[in-house]
Structures are given as C-alpha cells and as structure tokens.
Image (cartoon, rainbow, N blue to C red; front, side, top):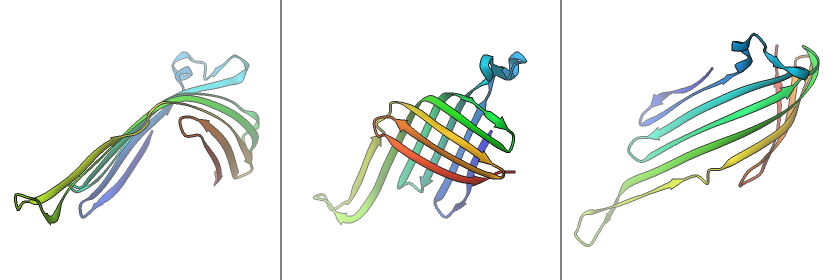
Length: 151
C-alpha cells in the first residue's frame, strides 16, 4: 500500500493512493512454479490548484519477476503489462474584456493518450545498493535507470 499526500498550501492540494499485491498470498503459495513471483497493482493520483487546474491519473498492471541470488546479492528480471489513464482540466477567467464587456473565460480539457504499456527490466541488489533499469513499450516509449539504498 502506498499513500502520497502533500499538505494543502494555499489552493494547492495533492493526493495519491496505490497498492501492489501478490495474489499467491491467498493460495498459500507466494511463488508460481519455477520461482516466479506475480503481483497486481493499482494507483490513483490527483492534483488540484484552486479552480484553475485539476489533474487526475490512474494505472493498473500485472507483473511477474524471478529473483536469482540471495537477499542482499541478487538479480531480478521483471516484466509487466499495464493500462493507464489521465485527465487534465484548466479553467480560469482573464482580466481581458470580451465583446459583452465581461471578463473572458478560458479553459480546456485534455485526456492523455491512454493505452496499454509493456515494461521489461532488471533489478540488481548489491548489498544496500539497488540498481534498476527498464524499458517501456507504449505510445511513447521510455527508459529508466534508478539507483537506491535499501536495508
């Protein structure tokens, strides 16, 4: 379970929640044959800035991985298939006057180019150092490289 939150500062607010769960937990079998771990995940986030801006996004995915090695020295290849959706709404009133001498209202709404995505990557655990690299195939492909400390 993940919770993302920022205290409201003026008109700004941010909230997010998500979970990642291994369904094998309910089957008394955390791993599938050959030591493959699976999980399902869902996440939602929203950001608001007064009446001016609203943004929300969610994603869901199924994942599989296989760890080779020991707790603090291992390599874990992983893959996931997911879907994501997002929406942005902007609305504000300008100080410019329209033809009827009323302030002009400006606004638009945009939905993300939402589609399936496939991610494949590798995590290396070297003592307390975690290094992950992955590549995502989607409408807009992406690569990531992450360094972290874990205890």
